Image 1 (cartoon, rainbow, N blue to C red):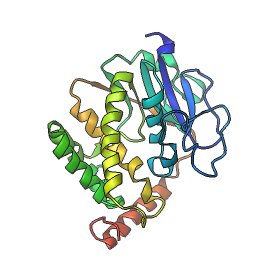
Image 2: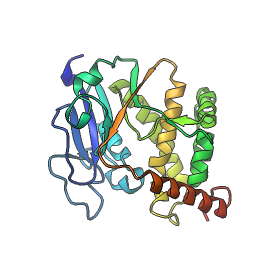
Image 3: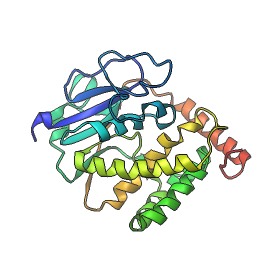
Image 4: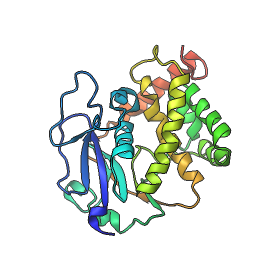
Length: 261
């Protein structure tokens, strides 16, 4: 693979240190959101065909949508300003050569799986978030993609997941994924009223997409999934995260089966 054939988008909403390797393309997400100041040395996600204004709910997916509609490169990926695939570059961040040697047209690079151990992917989601979007997504898959039903059931019933919406894959596969993903999310958005939800919970499309990505991968038995270690640039507050997860579970139970009040 020629090095220039691959780019990894780095989603950011604020000025932050960026790798100097030209593998990476920093992209400002939510550039169209009122009050967002331009981030220097980034591509804004409100250029061309875009959903930049939806960033408060779609999170890094506005960068995916922008690339799907406006950017052509044989291999494309997504990372985050604080999280990258691990490699041999500055701050232990992957360089082109680290990723290129693992890639082929039928491979998808993903971060090492996260294990939940004590609960399934479905239970983990609905204990921490409103259950209606997940249930509707599964209904849409049953209706529109019957060939993916078994894959969705396997993902929902297992106890591990590829998180963070991080990947590298061919543009052909990327386009197929985006077409599938955004069709599902757009229907969910049109059918579920989130106006009374908290700002955190309105990020539902972003949370949901992490699970949907796993279903799409599971259904694509023609792809080779390659797990890669990743590096986080900031200290992880593990105890605080655990406390927040438990608090959200209690809140969901108090509201009744994870539904919105």
